[in-house]
Amino acid sequence: MSPQKNWQAIAEGVDTPKELLIDGAWVLPVAGERMDVISPIDGHVIASVSLGAEEDVDRAVSSGRAAFEDGRWSRLAPSQRKATLIGWADLIESHRDELAVLQTLEMGKPADESWAVDLRSVGNTIRWYGEAIDKIVDEIPHTEPNSLALVTREPSGVVGAIVPWNFPLTMAAWKLGPALAAGCSVVLKPAEQSPLSALLLAQLALEAGIPDGVFNVVNGMGARVGSALAGHPDVDVLAFTGSTAVGRSIMEASARSNLKRVWLELGGKSANIIFEDADVDTAAKTAAWSIFYNQGEMCTAGSRLLVHRSIHDRVRDRVLEIASQMQPQNPLTPGAPAGALVSATHLSRVHSMVEHARGQGEALLTGGAPVLGDTGGSYYPPTVFDNVSPDAFIAQHEVFGPVLSITAFDTEEQAIQIANSTAYGLASAVWTTDLSRAHRVSRELKVGVVWVNCYEEGDMTLPFGGVKLSGFGRDKSLHALDKFMDMKSTWIQL
Ligand code: NAP
Ligand code: MG
Image (cartoon, rainbow, N blue to C red; front, side, top):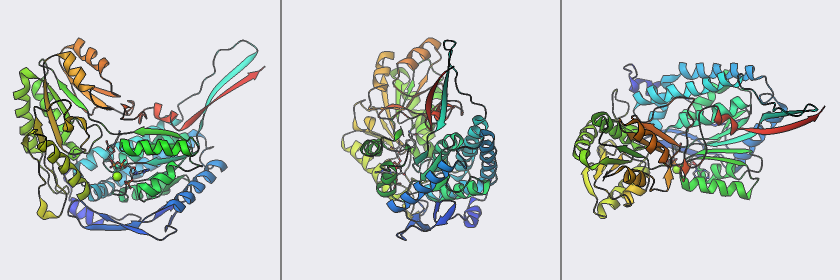
């Protein structure tokens, strides 16, 4: 946990650039448009930032291309890129309070968590890829004596990175770390709700000496800036985290333009499966945390709790106890267990899904309506439905809010079948003390990430991403570097 901080005072003192970062300069958009950033803490406007459009994407992509082609970054020795990235990580760490509070102001998560969780991983990610890039080697396959074969990897070129608002800086760092370490240029489009923290992150990159044009930021709307990047003829790779619907449109835009490589990290409907032989208290507590943490605004949220019928009542009661302890508060309050949802629009979307489930007769145990309305902010309490049928609306659709469905099962086969019965395949957790069962079930789950007797654990060595409608990209780990590098095969006749 973070040391006790006066977040209110830090929030009042924080400042960040408000314009677009193109070719190393803070510039106004060509059309001169601006956009208000509204804090979900109280509904107030906290900043006005430049709103980019298609022509600004063109300028940013051209500057990224020019930088890439003249080699000011792409052809540096890996050890030089490493030094700059590590310097940037140092600056991120020394500006940890400001970055953390900006995220909280723009998207509502508790400032303590923004500091302790997000801002630990952001600096760590940039440092990790900086440290990695001068240690990787390419391949020389064994050949017959008269030849030499080289399998080398080269930076792909200009990368478009489109990220969501739920972990604004972590998601950006998961793209920027490997893309910049590989030698690419990047044009980042933050979510419209969370541009402020990204702009400060970019300012620190300039201070660290990332050359002009190598890292550009174009704020704006997804339908304009995001789709312009996805359809741009001179973007080589598009790395995206967000919804499945937008992921589809990005693939279509790639197909219609230049067949740029697309990497998609999308939504989820992850299952916590608790068997009767589990450490039931830890499992139930963690399962509750896995859906209520970050207000449930997590692609990996444990939104389906599958529990063996013999322990159902025990688990349900423990979950309700944790739910009562994770009620939202002003996220600038030290120790707040949950904060605001990202926006009033998102709040009404979450609530309408809950209402829809109630209309279908689902049994609501707690929550179910917005709270703290007099603050002007967007607060929704932990909400739990019990005895949900596996094919029910609320068990199949991603809510992206603090809404849990509990479903009882009778056999291991049934648990696996229910866990695999959504269109998503991001993550899942298995709770059991039976080693064979842990392996057996892990193998059968159609997901990209499995946790056994834990949730959300892992470090930078572990790839992160999904299968099915959760996409196919992998963030983190050395594998992520391959997303931003092209493989070249060279055969030399001796
Ligand atoms: P979203 O609407 O898909 O937005 C994600 C990003 O895409 C934003 O920057 C958005 O810009 C942009 N965008 C919107 N329309 C676009 C278009 N037509 N072309 C190109 N870009 C476009 O998702 P969200 O509401 O921000 O985030 C919630 C979703 O993200 C959930 O479904 C969640 O599961 C998923 N998510 C997945 C992961 C993962 O790693 N798998 C992580 C976090 C979140 P605007 O801000 O202007 O809309
Ligand atoms: Mg959106």
